[in-house]
Length: 190
Length: 164
Image 1 (tube, rainbow over the protein chains, first blue to last red):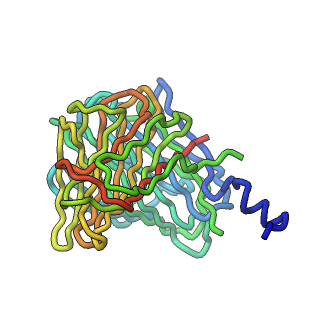
Image 2: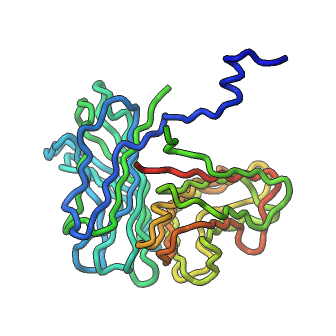
């Protein structure tokens, strides 16, 4: 049976989904950057996802975890957990009443050249004004051979029911190196 | 409107296959996501990924896993066979993994892959892999270690994620 026009249109023409949309992108230039900030985030999505790669200008061949705060809240309203494989050892860590959430592993400037930490950070129900906010992250920095490397699961909580409109990410020390790159995406519910 | 999250290619194996290859990958996206669901034909072994047909010892990885009674971390350096997951035989041992290749098309940084998944009857895993090349990735090869093959019915889907 030949479909009627409306059904024909939906069955036979490709639809472009807008459930996963790019909101903003930050690429760090030659001068480095003290922080990565996404502001004026619309409340029209259900979840947010940040996908990024990072390296620091801090000297040495060590590594650290990026720090994230919401809506410029620098008070001790956060908590966090981390499960990570560090070389051949498994570690777990936690922090309560902290001033930031940890979210992504990154190397210092003396680590393997051209290698960046990478991660995918999910911020769930970010615009819901009835809940505290929760993040989860999967991240790693693999440096090969003599330089230590880690793969990390992070979870974090911001004890505030406000919708998130600003996200600020900073290094623990130093600044973001050139070619660090962060992209913010919005995920819509049905 | 341009799709931010786009399916580039997908395949379901109709026969046993030693290597699955995605080639001529467009550089127009920011990240790639390869979703694998399948089994091997003869053994419980590691899943290996390579880029741009590079068979040199230009890879390294860190793999975190839990097998139900303990957690462990494994590291490999200067290897031609970086482990990004596991495969096993049998319909009850399907491996399911998401392999995320971050900023795959830039020509200034080494390339990092983040993987997570597992086999419900064996273990859960997450890992990070580094390919020490600044070349844009235009090919991905996925294969079981030890000369094994993927079983018929295994599925592979490649997605592109584009930042504006």
